[in-house]
Image (cartoon, rainbow, N blue to C red; front, top):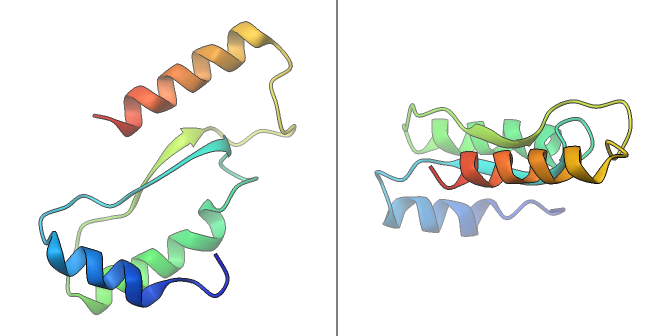
Amino acid sequence: MCPFPFKEIIRELVKYKNAHLEWVQEEPKNAGGWTYAEPRLRNIRAFLNQDDEVTYSGRPIMAAAAVGYTKTHNEQLEALLVSAMK
Protein backbone atom coordinates (compact mmCIF):
# COMPACT_ATOMS: atom_id res chain seq x y z
CA MET A 1 0.00 0.00 0.00
CA CYS A 2 2.98 2.23 0.11
CA PRO A 3 3.41 3.97 -2.21
CA PHE A 4 -0.37 4.21 -2.47
CA PRO A 5 -1.60 3.27 -5.99
CA PHE A 6 -3.38 6.56 -6.75
CA LYS A 7 -3.01 6.33 -10.55
CA GLU A 8 -4.23 2.75 -10.75
CA ILE A 9 -7.27 3.41 -8.58
CA ILE A 10 -8.15 6.58 -10.50
CA ARG A 11 -7.86 4.67 -13.79
CA GLU A 12 -10.36 2.06 -12.55
CA LEU A 13 -12.78 4.59 -11.06
CA VAL A 14 -12.84 6.55 -14.33
CA LYS A 15 -13.86 3.34 -16.14
CA TYR A 16 -16.65 2.64 -13.65
CA LYS A 17 -18.11 6.06 -12.87
CA ASN A 18 -21.15 4.68 -11.05
CA ALA A 19 -19.22 2.20 -8.94
CA HIS A 20 -19.55 2.26 -5.18
CA LEU A 21 -16.15 2.36 -3.46
CA GLU A 22 -15.90 0.13 -0.40
CA TRP A 23 -12.91 -0.94 1.67
CA VAL A 24 -13.17 -4.58 2.81
CA GLN A 25 -10.84 -6.16 5.34
CA GLU A 26 -10.95 -9.10 7.73
CA GLU A 27 -8.86 -7.41 10.41
CA PRO A 28 -10.52 -5.19 13.04
CA LYS A 29 -11.23 -1.65 11.84
CA ASN A 30 -8.38 -0.24 13.93
CA ALA A 31 -5.81 -2.91 12.95
CA GLY A 32 -5.92 -3.13 9.17
CA GLY A 33 -5.31 -0.76 6.30
CA TRP A 34 -8.56 1.22 6.65
CA THR A 35 -7.11 4.10 8.67
CA TYR A 36 -4.32 4.48 6.11
CA ALA A 37 -6.39 4.04 2.96
CA GLU A 38 -9.59 5.91 3.86
CA PRO A 39 -8.30 9.50 3.63
CA ARG A 40 -6.44 8.68 0.41
CA LEU A 41 -9.52 7.13 -1.16
CA ARG A 42 -11.58 10.14 -0.03
CA ASN A 43 -9.06 12.44 -1.74
CA ILE A 44 -9.34 10.41 -4.94
CA ARG A 45 -13.12 10.79 -4.85
CA ALA A 46 -12.77 14.56 -4.38
CA PHE A 47 -10.22 14.76 -7.22
CA LEU A 48 -12.70 13.01 -9.53
CA ASN A 49 -15.59 15.19 -8.29
CA GLN A 50 -17.40 12.09 -7.06
CA ASP A 51 -19.28 12.74 -3.86
CA ASP A 52 -19.98 9.13 -2.88
CA GLU A 53 -18.50 8.23 0.47
CA VAL A 54 -15.95 5.46 0.80
CA THR A 55 -17.53 2.85 3.03
CA TYR A 56 -16.05 0.15 5.25
CA SER A 57 -16.94 -3.53 5.57
CA GLY A 58 -15.04 -5.48 8.16
CA ARG A 59 -14.75 -6.32 11.79
CA PRO A 60 -15.53 -3.61 14.32
CA ILE A 61 -12.86 -1.82 16.36
CA MET A 62 -11.39 -4.33 18.80
CA ALA A 63 -8.75 -4.27 21.52
CA ALA A 64 -7.38 -7.66 20.41
CA ALA A 65 -6.47 -8.89 16.95
CA ALA A 66 -8.93 -11.78 17.26
CA VAL A 67 -12.10 -12.47 19.24
CA GLY A 68 -10.74 -15.71 20.67
CA TYR A 69 -13.83 -17.80 19.97
CA THR A 70 -14.18 -19.71 16.72
CA LYS A 71 -17.96 -19.36 16.64
CA THR A 72 -17.82 -15.58 17.13
CA HIS A 73 -14.99 -15.27 14.60
CA ASN A 74 -17.00 -17.16 11.99
CA GLU A 75 -20.15 -15.14 12.70
CA GLN A 76 -18.21 -11.88 12.25
CA LEU A 77 -16.56 -13.19 9.09
CA GLU A 78 -19.91 -14.17 7.60
CA ALA A 79 -21.40 -10.76 8.50
CA LEU A 80 -18.54 -8.84 6.87
CA LEU A 81 -18.72 -10.95 3.71
CA VAL A 82 -22.48 -10.40 3.46
CA SER A 83 -21.94 -6.66 4.02
CA ALA A 84 -19.20 -6.51 1.38
CA MET A 85 -21.26 -8.33 -1.25
CA LYS A 86 -24.50 -6.38 -0.87
